[in-house]
Length: 631
Image (cartoon, rainbow, N blue to C red; front, side, top):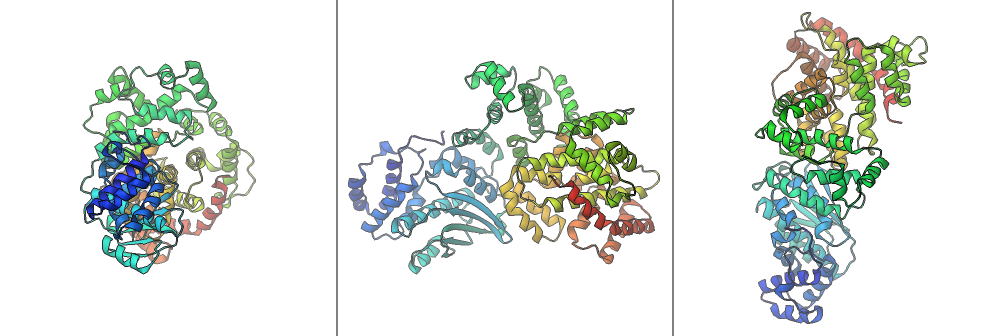
């Protein structure tokens, strides 16, 4: 079933009008129109044709002039067979939520409508809207074209989600009050005027509501065909992007090599190698990176045997796959699968792992982790690894000179910074800076990076200080500061993968008053919250297993009452405190200290002293933020 079809647009559009006029017993009108536009027979009607939305304007103007049916455009839109859009129709039918349907329309609109309209989604406090912005002139034909579009979209939404899926209100350019009243009756909701937009708004109950025909497996199966069709419209794909798309179509990676790719793209092996090198990479790293991300997706299916996964990833035996996975993630496949179940990895998260290329860990981070994992590493080796990146080195030296670290003498180099701040803290800060800049470098993110870094530094400093008062028998992890610094990096990941959705989400998050409400809204939009995304990304980057374990613990506690190690509980408690409270007033801090005393068996007087010290240095943290922002 193809989503693209021969360009028999005229036959397509006229056939739709024939169906509409037949409903109102006005075939005589159609016969007159047929004389002008040419004969139309069933043989010219292709079920997978796109709609020539431009021709609709002219034709509807003619038909309206000869017919007394005011709703001719609405009825034409309703006549469009659901299967008209081929694979896209069934992909839409398989969506789990209205937001997914809207996102699919935004992504694939150009595949089914041969016109220049733009489509976008808007999330508001009181609901969700699909907005169509179209070049509009005040003519009868143009207005009827907008009515046709409106009718087509609403009819498709209701075929997918059921008759109850009705808009709360509609805005569109209107030419008279009669049209407003007529369309209000047709669509059963308020219709108001807008100068240039079609806005179809649904109440907030539909943002995350599960639709009756949801079928994530079918949706996933159809995605490859949609991606192939979209590729024809997107000339901006790099050769590496095209390789990823090709690998995605294969059931197994067995015997896949550079030659396989060269054959697929009709080039020689040497040409394929050069084209990849021109983009600063090589086939081995591309293939390994794809295997890594693909392995995460396959492991989310708990019914898929590890032997099968090994073969699908092109390994000769399960043991080879397990060794490779342990090298990538410092976890066995079975341990990661257990983590997936703990984090409630669901179909939307599978979609994230399957369709979006998770970014690679920065090389500096890889080198720092490799060096510090050795029990007897040389500090000079760590210095050399950090010095490779002059920007990173400058930021660390700058931080060591900040008032927060009690600067008395001026620090001029990394060796002095390490002596002053300590090896563990330098390692934590370096990893956090490089990790966050890796996420922010890809594109202009629609988030406030200054606020992001202030939150990261605040959480890290609070949890590392409060952890010093853990019970004597419980030694806090050296990685708790880094876990706090990176607690929110999953939001950077989601923002980089879905910038448009994030831009709409940002102001809505400001309106929510609690962490639970913020997480629920994020999950509706992305299918995953930032903390679960953090845990997945850090595992993908092979950060130390202690960091992954701590992150996994507080990510799980966001949605359940299950408590893991003390570090996870502490980070969760501090995150929740700052998410729920805009101001650190004395009464709220008193409540926090009491909670920590009870949860972690920490002496309350000690906790109060720590919190007093932390709040007194908050301004110094705010000053430090400017030194961490990307240049």
